[in-house]
Length: 306
View 1: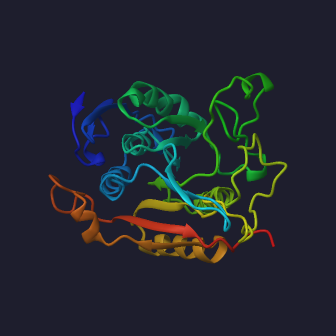
View 2: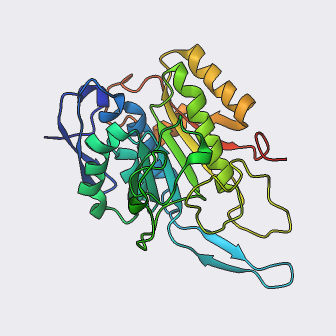
């Protein structure tokens, strides 16, 4: 075991990382099994977790304004804000957000969930104030088939005996935050990833009703709510993506497609802001060269039901 915050490419050989973060140390198992990239730590998760720990410091509770045009508005603090992570890998980013006070739905493929993610979350979740739930989420499954009250998977068919009815509090839309790191590296993944982000954004932009067990009975991309509907959750969630610019043309084209096809509008966080947040402290110059953080949001229009 190593007590380390070294760049991920220096620690791939370590089966267990003792990873200090936000005054705690997460013990994270990783596997170099050749089956999936998601079973080991990558630079994007390291960079994004450090940046958001500063960006979100002291902002882990939501202030909601209630009331109508005819009643006085009241400000109150709700429960923890909710985040969903796509491609959670070994769980660093999900645990980092939970340490900042978020309730986090950590998602990945069935293999990653079973081999590293679920066990890492279970081993560390008592160290953080937020909740972390683990679910399989296959980006290739149409959002109309998503199931939110299954304790194992959002996208795999489940026997009814595994679903709901036990009083469990499942994390489901609306979400306040969507994050993903080290997931834009293959052309075949670009459309499924952004389609998934779009669907989650649209669901989180819908009027807050009781969490659906599935989406088969509602629109996947709901229209913008009426202006007369005073609902504080009717705003698309903020999105943060961390990528490695191994192929500049590919990355540029991916973000262009995100805007043109799904209305997901991103801006790159300047490198100097990342450095001010502490990214790269203690590392040699160039260790995280090419890692970028992008902030975005759905435009609320593209792909919405008319």
